Length: 161
Image 1 (spheres, rainbow, N blue to C red):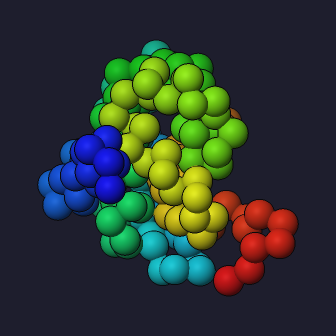
Image 2 (image 1 turned 30 degrees about the horizontal axis):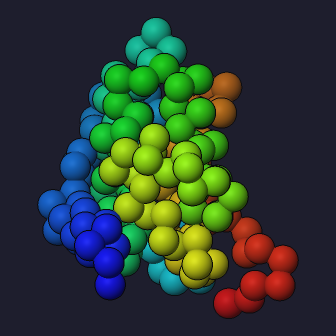
């Protein structure tokens, strides 16, 4: 294992052990449930949008280390961002974990690049993407009071459970 891989693994383990923004948020104006029925990961995401910016975000849930670490890293990455900035981060993250981002762009992802290795494991992409798809759905909703259950992303063609 390279030093870089070891560092990324440590970032994932640290965010799993001590997830950031891991709490309920009673005054959220958007709440969404996400689950991955293939592996059992589930989470609730709370979002407070103020003037089209994410003034606060939190989550609670259970799942594998990748799922929990990804949710933790995501909340830290998008807190304080506008809806458009968060959507741009979502798109870049999706390209990273699906292996569609050129290597030269990985450094610009900051600590999120720790999850780039999941692109080699298609079923783990779902674990890393669960919270992100919940965020995308919450931001995409026209309603100010989203309360939805969202299943994880569809399996890529040719991938089965």
